[in-house]
Image (cartoon, rainbow, N blue to C red):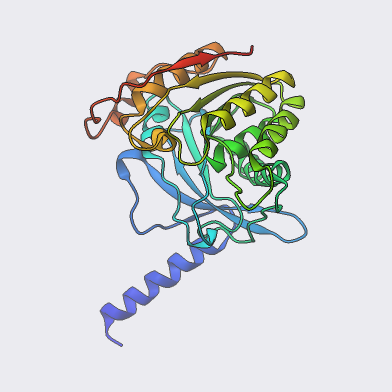
Length: 311
């Protein structure tokens, strides 16, 4: 074996060892230096210890920084083949305001160990199990010197939005608010799956003391208007504090709002107001100007929007 090949082998061994330990920084093939992106494996301890592949976007410096956790959705097929979630638009938004952004892949997704626990048709249970993984990641993060454990916001898209609502019922110390983008889980093989979502949302609301902000559109390929409105109505009737931003038609599928540059014009002003309302940093800071938009956003899509509140 030549010296070059030997050096390559040594490098691969080092990378493998770095990925193996819990809380040890893992190497990714491509990381976005403009967002200070890194990847680590976080241990979730229990009867069997599993590891959660977690993306971190952190400002320069020692902190402490407020924390934004962003929860991923679920694509069709085997969760193990799902790519690591990299919500760069949202990460940039929070970094500009001085937040460290934490994006955990739950058990059974991507390179996280363990198995995805679906819960069958019990969608409420599904969310609570997913939320336990978020708690494990946050337990690790809040123990770090760079984290401000008293200033936390939890955000989620699709299945991650559902996970966020479930996590809210834990009333985790330091969490100030929840943001749900098109949250839910489409289970067409389950009888009355839409009704199950509404019931599950109500169950979460009974134990949740936090404000939440919900975004849903009317051309969502997963959840139609009647479904998300029933979820919101049941949630607020059960005591949940949720502001619904029903933004109408967006592009070809409103389910994609959160990951679209055009969608930023819809959700960012609302999230900025929520941050201010709950006493979290809400405006860009000059110290973090380096995280300004790397690429000019697309022309905004003009939606038909209504807002429904339950404070």
